[in-house]
Amino acid sequence: MSSGAHGPGFWYGLSAYMLWGLFPVYFKLIGFVPADQIIAHRIVWSFLLLLAVVTIGSLRRELVLTGHAIRLYTVAALLIAVNWFIYVWAVTHNFIIETSLGYFITPLVNVLLGVVILGERLRRFQWVAIGFAAAGVGYLAVVHGTVPWIAIGLAVSFGTYGLVKKKAPLGSVVGLTLETGLLLVPALLFLAATEFRGTGAFMHLDPRSMMLVAAAGPITTLPLVLFAAAVQRIPLSAIGILQFIAPTVQFVLGVMVYREPFTVQKLVGFALVWMAVVLFGTEGIVANRRRSVRSAVPSL
Image 1 (cartoon, helix red, strand yellow):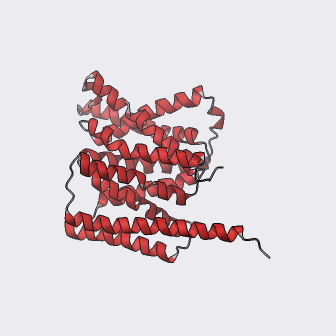
Image 2 (cartoon, rainbow, N blue to C red):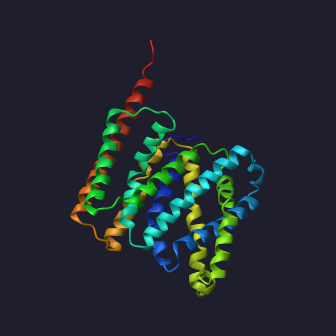
């Protein structure tokens, strides 16, 4: 597996996060459809696309189903479904800036998950970075009178999803096909129920809008495939650095393009989180260089 700075894993991850950063543009275009229906359509169209890729690419032989694989991918499927629902709802309800906050703190959630689940030990400045991030989130909660649940929900769900995918036994495309297929029947039943209740949107749209909604499949599947390929090839620490790309692009879109309010109080909270990000990234680079120097020194 390639772990170099310019290996394929790096480019897979970079591409995934650039695409994720631009997602608000697409979801704004289909904001006339409820978020839960968008997610259901994403599941259906993604599965059809992935199934075609697996079949045409003769990847079916890689689909080795075991109880462990089914349990793991079921957890991954539920996590990404929750993550996408929060994200789509937030974007279509003008909370793009808060989604960026969620993805800014996701790398720090990854570190905490390593401590809680994997028993990893944090270095001193990693704790300081987490403290700054917690202070920023806490400050925003106090000044606005409500906990930033969108940001916290996105960070926890996607951070946990990354941890689960790190243990994924199947290839990126085959694994994502299984992951999406596990949600297919519930998604179809949900869409059928919306039509029965008269609240379904898809069948009542013009052809152009129907195509836009159906495009949720390929548009959201591509970066997930790239992410799955990256997370199996490079360390989670590298994924953590790349994760800052998407929220930066989202933040710029929220402030500069969609003109969401960004008050002085929000600036203070975000500044604390950005300080945490800079400290976390700098500490990681220094620690990796020290390890490289020690490994390069021959033992006597």
